[in-house]
Image 1 (cartoon, rainbow, N blue to C red):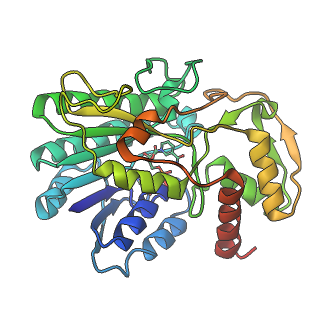
Image 2: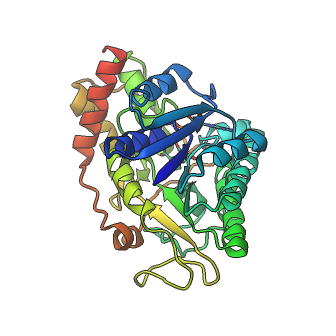
Length: 333
Ligand SMILES: NC(=O)c1ccc[n+]([C@@H]2O[C@H](COP(=O)([O-])OP(=O)(O)OC[C@H]3O[C@@H](n4cnc5c(N)ncnc54)[C@H](O)[C@@H]3O)[C@@H](O)[C@H]2O)c1
């Protein structure tokens, strides 16, 4: 098995790569090391991987089809985990074009190369944000996802649909993974857990939106990457649904799978867990709801369990504790 991970210098990509390399797998990684957030953090994540002999890194933009094709031609990966893309719900309000270029055009190139080189299983990152304006929780993969609230969510949903057309036309096995708020060591500086830590260690106040009346299905990164490893071994097979909850397409080897914790946490409880783990207190500025935000997220993970026997094992207190320990040692607090 040879796995290509796009977005390998990212939070989830580097964590998955570490797990695969530790298990003796061969991993090829690409990333353009974009400066959307601190590239030195991305480089530090890569530095954890470069000592492994089964690893190679390629500085590359997925918007460049020729370069990407050359990489596929050279390595012919059996598995492709496509995580590269423009992230961030709030940034998408001010930079919509970046989401069209990286997420829609870039993902199209990855899908096209997977077709050309007959990848055995292509797994693509989508998001809980595609559930958008839905009010039914927990969200199930077969629920409609037609009312995105941001161009970020819309770009991810567009990729889900593009992927279906290729799965159907070329019998290309594709799993779309809808991640729910991932957190943990080596996390993303633009996401709330990181912003909160930065504020609490620097004695700055935090903005808490919708007066704290929000829930998130926080998913600890190690739980997510372990389930991802198992999911890689479970490509969708046309006409072979698994269990009663399968979102398998009726005409193609294409399925959507939620990857979440199935145990939503009140935002204020998450904030209190950080206070407990750091031994410090937040100064809180309560704010109104932000445009484009979802009030609640909660994953129905029955399909994931059926496919992988996945059971998240990390409690919110343990997960936040591990995040805080890493943050203190990395940033020397
Ligand atoms: N972290 C979460 O909670 C979460 C939730 C839902 C979905 N996702 C999705 O999972 C994927 C990984 O997320 P993450 O949290 O690790 O984000 P991340 O930003 O840490 O990782 C993405 C990586 O992709 C790279 N990249 C961006 N544009 C690129 C391009 N055009 N060519 C090559 N590389 C490019 C970036 O440099 C970055 O290292 C993303 O697609 C994201 O939308 C993440």
